[in-house]
Image 1 (spheres, helix red, strand yellow):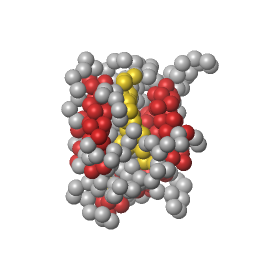
Image 2 (cartoon, rainbow, N blue to C red; image 1 turned 90 degrees about the vertical axis):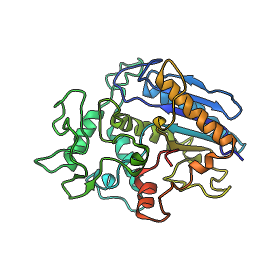
Image 3 (cartoon, rainbow, N blue to C red; image 1 turned 90 degrees about the horizontal axis):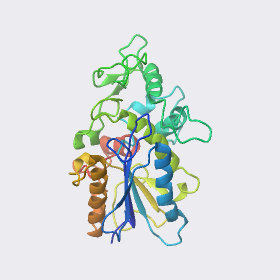
Image 4 (cartoon, rainbow, N blue to C red; image 1 turned 120 degrees about the vertical axis):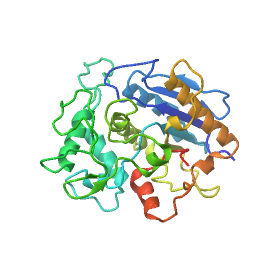
Length: 318
């Protein structure tokens, strides 16, 4: 039987200004399993988008019926293996997986809606470039080369962020080797998580997006019924893979792995296509197959452990 009763697909933006109903804005496609087509909206800021998603999923946390919603954002939920252990001067806490370590760091470091006037609308201005600079400074050898983040809107505006891509794997000051792409990025042919600006870049979306995703996942009203695939759930197995207590499942998407629906605005067409893809597969009871261990990844292998503890996986990138 189908896994979900509602599907929420989000095309994110790391931009620095309010933007709505046009290219490179945030777009959300959502709808119940009984719907023929999704409803779309374009919140003008990340704060308004976070609130919109929270409103869409909150009823599932409060409902007495065992219903479930799939929530997908189009940015990486993790970084390449090795990044998390080098991220902070504080030693890793026992029992805290690498992906949580990254989320906690960014939840504290990233600031959004800067220069917002009291009582005004969210500004959508963030400190993402400064956060990348601080991470590069911490990870890089004192005299350089600097990395792993690269490419700024204003070249040389941050001392430790180069404009050109560092050599991959990037070797940190501690000797850790960090590749430019995750295993799932190679499979889906998506860009590196470390490129902050330019055509096809996703680095800014990730820095600003994980901040919001962490707020949703660990919201006190939602946390007890929320899980992140595959970090917290492992790979789909039998019919009882997700218990009835899991009402909100978060999963990463990369819309470019699907052909967008014809639309005057490509981003809107992409989230509509992702909604239809998940909706149709689930109705046929085939979406579960997309949540199983990816082909070519052996259970219990080093790759499997890295994916489930640190890197994450793109839904549909089998």
